[in-house]
Amino acid sequence: MADDGLQRLSVIYCGICSFPPEYCEFGGKFQKCKTWLSTNHPDLFDQLYSDDAVLAKSTQGQLSLEKQEKVEREIQKLQEKEARAAEKELAKKLSSKVVVKRVERSKRKHVIAVSGVDVFGIDAKKLAKTFASKFATGASVTKNVEGKDEIVIQGDVGDEVEHYLTTLLEEKGLDGIKVERTEDKPKKKSSSN
Image 1 (tube, helix red, strand yellow):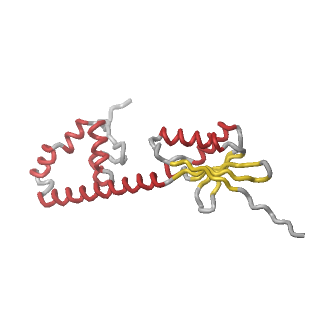
Image 2: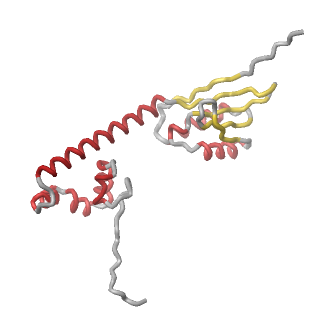
Image 3: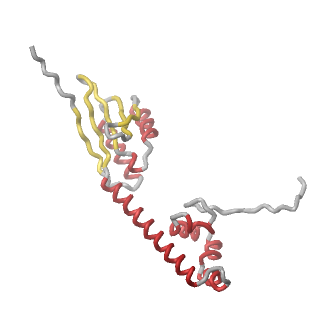
């Protein structure tokens, strides 16, 4: 291989926002990015965000004091916005529930409809595939009346589904989430002679 005089440059990308660490402040998750950088690359963190580095930038004329204060205010606003969004998402998750509904099809045939798992970051299609293999039955993802994903499992496996979902949510650290059981029976047709 011929040496063309070019050096290979190694670039570090943030594990949170995927920007180079010098540009994390523009990503909207700046506080998380700084935490990630201090944990994974402490030398680069010191180089960019230590008190000496910030002071050096301001004294070299790269940042005037007014601009530095403005940047700090903007960063503060972004951090507050990010915290509010995280609180809102957590509140949404905690107020949500997973519904396991037993639906009677005909005489002794039943299906189980599971809805509400998408709120917790669980992929409905993968979960349907897991149910199909775990319970040796048919399972598919359909849209319910509200337009949200619903997993329909053939057979009367409501207890097993409820237990599996409770365990899955506990593994994800969401043990306060309620798994609600309901039953849906078809209306009997009235015979009028």
